[in-house]
Length: 400
Image (cartoon, rainbow, N blue to C red; front, top):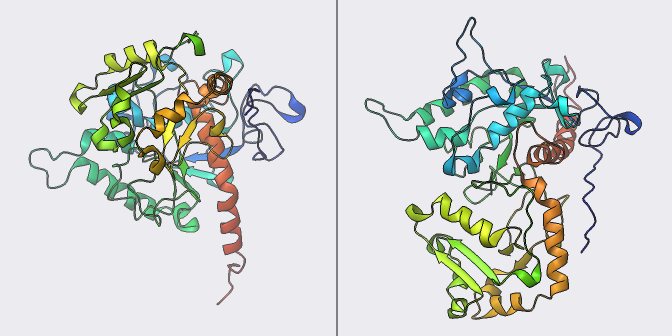
C-alpha cells in the first residue's frame, strides 16, 4: 500500500501528452484542441428529445438549436435530483464534450484536455451518441393514455434506425461508437442491436456477455446523491466509535453477513430500510456523522469496479469473498483485526482518490468525467487494432 499521490498518466495521446492539461514538453495547454487531446470525439447532432429536451430545454428561439449554450455553466439545463442523479453520467459527458471548444472553465486555467469535440467525421477517434438513456428509462417507461408503446421504447427504436443509416456506423459496425446506458434497466430494447458499441455502464449484472463485457465496455461510478463534504475534516482512527456501518435493503442485495447477531454490538451500525424510507436527508445525516471517508468493505468475488486498470482498490478498500462473509462472525472478526496502521494507510489513500469519483461541470483534472474519457481512450487502442486488421483486404475495387 502506498500513500503517495496519484499520478494518472498513460500513453493514449498522439504525442505522449498527459491525460489532462499539459502540452508538448510539459508546458501548459490553455485551449484543448485535436492535437493536444487524448481523444477526438464526433458528437451526433441528435434532436433535443434524445437529450436536453428531457430536461425541459426545447432549443427554440430566434433559430432552432440542437444544443444549449454551455459557455456559461450557470445557464445549462439542470439534471433532476434524487435517485435520478445516480445515473446522470451521459449528462456530464455531453456537457463536457460540448464545452471542449467553448472555453467553459478555461478562465480558471485548469481545463483538462482529455477529449475534444471534432466536427469532421474523418478526424474522429470515437463517435459519441448523446442519448440520455437512463433518464429516458426513469421518465418515459410508463405507457401514457392512448400509447401502444412507451416513449422510452419509441426513442430507442428511433435511435437504432438513425444509427443504422449512418455511414460511420456501417463502416465500423458500431465498434468505435460510445453509448451511455448507465442505468441497468435502460435501453432494454436497443442494447442488443447496438451491442457492438462501447457502452458506459454501472455494472454487467443485467447484460449477457455477448452484449456487454469488460473487453469493450467501461464501468463508471454513480453520481453522488448527497452533497460532497468540501474541506472534510473526517476523524481519524481513534475518534471513530463505529467499526462498521451499513444502510440499505439487505433483502434486495442479499447481504447475509450483516444479519449476523454479532452486528448488534455497539460498534456496528446497521440500518435496514425499505425503499420508500431511504430518504436523502437520512443518508446525508449518516454520511456527515459516520461515513465520511470510511474505508469501503466490498463483499464480492467478481465485482467490476470503475477505472481498476489504473486504480489499485486494495490500497483503499477491504475485499471479502462472498463465501467467507457468509460464515458466522467472520466479517466482524476480520474487520476488528485491521490494525490502526493499516486502516490509516487506506484512509489517507481514500481521501487522495476521492476526486476520481466526482462529477462536475466544468470538469476538472482527473475527476470522474476525465477518468471516463481516459478509460474510453485506452479501450480505443484495441478497437482501432480490430478495425485496422479487418481492413487489410478491403482495398477499394478488390474482389473476394
